[in-house]
Length: 120
Picture 1 (cartoon, helix red, strand yellow):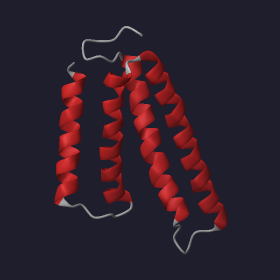
Picture 2 (picture 1 turned 90 degrees about the horizontal axis):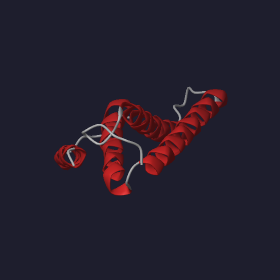
Picture 3 (picture 1 turned 180 degrees about the horizontal axis):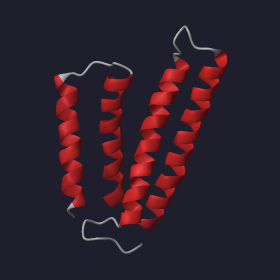
């Protein structure tokens, strides 16, 4: 296990975590968009978006594996939940999905829980 800052993650780990979450969100949103392209999109544009999404998911995978190798699973896994919250917000903004009160409460609970875990 690598040495960590008082919050549990050093600067490098925080950057890897941010990159992993970004890869997860971009990958999932990109896959959704590529699987349901707009009618005015060419096959090339759809394929490029699909390739970008696969690349983002690949980056997420390798960054996540590195984090798991350096930190305890019980500490690092709750941060994966932040990806779900960010993904939900991105789906609302990018894909124009509907925000419900349950989704909003869930995002708030996830964020609060990760904050509590980060203090340990």
